[in-house]
Image (cartoon, rainbow, N blue to C red; front, side):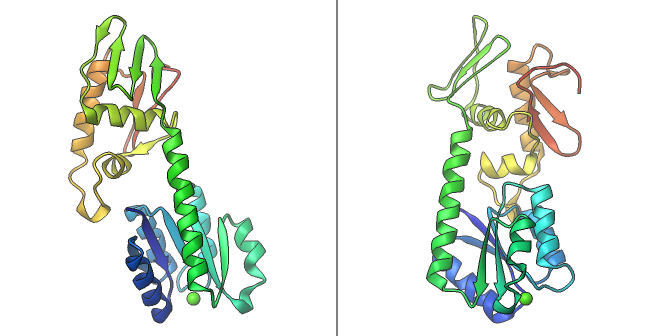
Length: 236
Ligand code: CA
């Protein structure tokens, strides 16, 4: 289910948007000021943020800048009052993906949200490869087959999924929370311990790496998560 964060300090608009999105089947969360918005982005990791420009504490611009820097994959749709038209260009320059002026047409807004999320879903699916080769390992994700040299590797479904997810984002750090959401389907307010992820990664390494204690393909990024190194370079 797609998660949409609604950032709006005006109660009536916030409530209206929440109802609309709930009805359309999105998972929603709200933030009433810029600080809370950044917290929620960090913790809840929405797919799309509806971002009001004029907010208490930190402005929509600041929130937008934060999202672009920390979570560039999140889609930002900025909402602004008509008399703030001037800031449209500034908003797009700041990295908003789209922009609507209040009062906006509800059906237009819904159509845009739907389009953006559909596009995001298809591009992230395209990221993940059907086959993968690194070192002497060959993996066919469609057939759930993996070999290392002549040795057949017995990977669980979860291990295949984790490897595919990491390999689809080569060199990119994937957090444990990302994996818990993407592979296990947990939502942020219902997360098990991230040890679940660490255990699976350890098993994967034991099967894929020459030395699971000094992995060259699936690397740890201390305090953050994991990344797949397509070069398999030692160290780091
Ligand atoms: Ca406002």
